[in-house]
Image: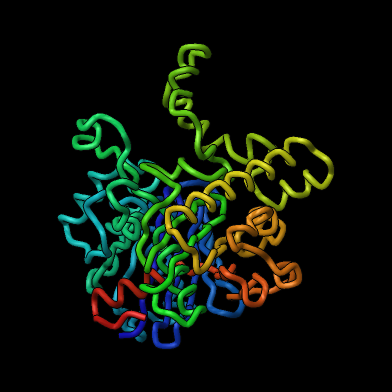
Length: 399
């Protein structure tokens, strides 16, 4: 049993990847989009021409059964590969889960109880697990929590200076996110440096549509920019990042906006989108290069916030062995990397212009030869990390 099926269930989608853990490569991947809507479609990739199937897929169970049909039709045959586990991404584990767990009814109940902390994600993740257990009842199902890696945060890093009743009764604290990505990327950075994770201190910049910075000391998260929710911290595609906490109350008094409406705007209509009119960094650059002030401001603010957190986490760690860029923007945008590190040479952070600008993929070093701090680009692989953790938990044979 050397294969793991990784499932990421959204409110109207199912993304999946079957991984051969001996060869450490995917055997198939795909997605079901627009579940419960018109135009629902399944796309299943095995390396050649993709298999596509149109809906309707009225619910997640119908969608997942269509996925199993696609495996039966186009391969690999799940009965032949003998699944070791199904790994499920769960966004929020609160303070309850510091590591992956094999799913039972009690775990399902706890994930449901945590839904108020991640109302857009946990209910959808929960539905994917419930359906997965129903259609694949003979395989262990493992929940891997995006917050778990940050359960090592010290009390001074996760505590907000708010009343005890808020913290004790309502779970108001920093949890952090992108933990699965940070775990994978920080470990790969240590391997690049030919060192054990316990001997490496790094800053991980996960820069996608959502973005976060994490200080990792000896393989353990010790500070991170996202907070109780993924809204806090860096400027993101549609999220504001750090704002004065009094903004909702102020707008309620002056503009008649309900706190829930302000929260929705800060999450879905702010960030790069609010400043430039676009949340895709490639379009933001196109507009900035065309001279649009809003796009230029968006880039300046985005990189200012990055430098601010890099400096802060350098102070938290005391020393930085590696600064790691990952996720879509971090891996592919050389100009963002250049701007983010501009003026930080006194911290030992520098880029080699040719290395940084080179069109490349895969893990690579973009700092000058012999630099005090290695600046790395490490493509993240959250599905592989989930599969590793699920396999180790169920068989003791992680990667």
